[in-house]
Amino acid sequence: MRTDIDALADRVLGVLSASAESDYIGEDVNQLEHALQAAHFAREAGASDAQVLAALTHDIGHLLDPEAPSMAGLGVIDHERVGADYLRAQGFSESVARLVEGHVQAKRYLTFAKPAYAARLSEASRGTLEWQGGPMDADEAKAFEADPLFGPILAMRTWDERAKVVGLEVLGLEGYRACLVAHLEETARADDAG
Ligand code: FE
Image (cartoon, rainbow, N blue to C red; front, side, top):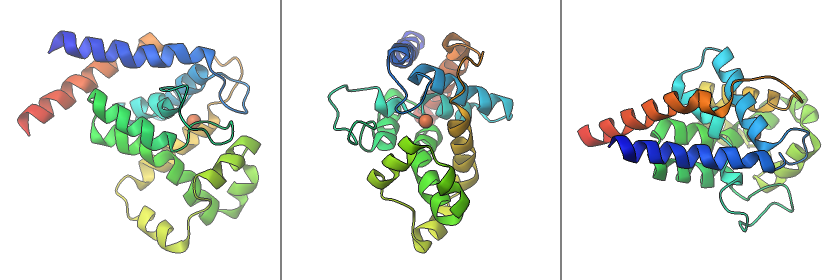
């Protein structure tokens, strides 16, 4: 099991590492800086390992396939689902996958529930919102509020939005390897037991 998990960790870290070459659409940091800063803010907030890993990988759906259909140059369509499915396939826990899957829902929720929020969105983020279904309606918002991961998903969103600071010094990718390996090991054990 040991080597399998190390290979999985290498693969995921490899995808993230290569993303230093990719722009974070419409922002002044690259995708790797964005991921590392999101994870940094999660750690700073005392988040769980699952939340930290979700913050680190939340945009991985943008990085997997250069040919994937895009939102008119604003990133991969349904990147949150693409990313969550990829993470499930790599052996991440369902909570990490669901946090990643939910980060766009948080934006759809906040643009419904907090009118001031919509006004603060960056231009790129406003552009993608339309592709992502626009603001939630009241029923969708109510269902989302009842989700056990409602709070953690909103927290992810705040780290995501802050993770655009040019030149911020944060822990590098290798600093997350131990946490990643432990998470994959734990999830594999839980699957074996279940
Ligand atoms: Fe993001």
